[in-house]
Length: 93
Image (tube, rainbow, N blue to C red; front, top):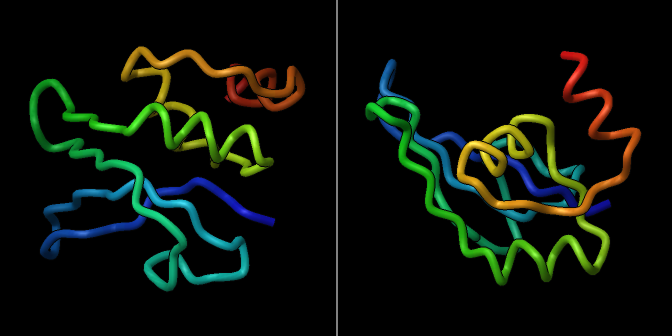
């Protein structure tokens, strides 16, 4: 299964994340298919830059976003259509 998830970058105690499309069997910072954006939680407000067209493409071909990526996408103001069950889990958390 293909997942859209965060890949950690940056120095110790200074995280910055890349939003990547990767096979679910790959390790967190391992091999990925495509880099579609970045997220920096250390700035005020947090910096989010995601290529919307590539995000929509990967969602259309069946890639599943992780919970943290869904939160980042919503914080960026990007609306996506996901399964109702997945949204219910996120809102309950």
